[in-house]
Length: 175
Image (cartoon, rainbow, N blue to C red; front, top):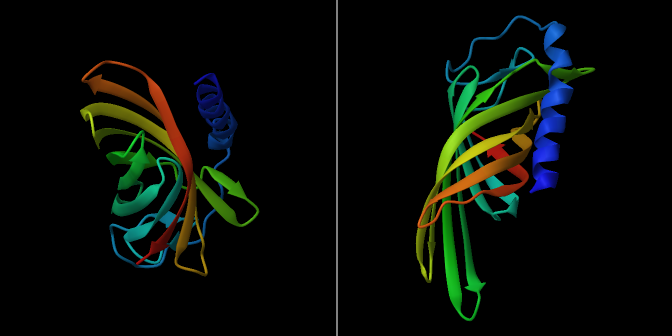
């Protein structure tokens, strides 16, 4: 838990000084208004589908809602928990991005933070809770792919209150 909080704080501290000197960008091309623009280059499409490796391991789907926001969902499952048990986890997050904040040479890495919820169905019942995710995304300019790293603070609220963490590395195909 301390390690996750430290990583989130370090990412936040690293990105704050970059806000003072925004990167110069080229004029934007016309594209779908719901497509996030990174360094003036639109992503290949307003949706992405891919894999998330970490906690949880599963599939991820993203839908761009505007120039700097998106809806991110994840579905994960584990049919080998305990002695023949199972677990199905669904997450949904609204995430706000800061395009152009972190530019290294010509590569634009986009920090993001958000708020969301999760639902966990397992052999002993179910759980509900809130999430506070954050991370950094990179969309390739010459290929329809996106890489991202995410860490989240998980707050189970039902059946019992608690605090946890999740996160990992993901890749999505943009269409």
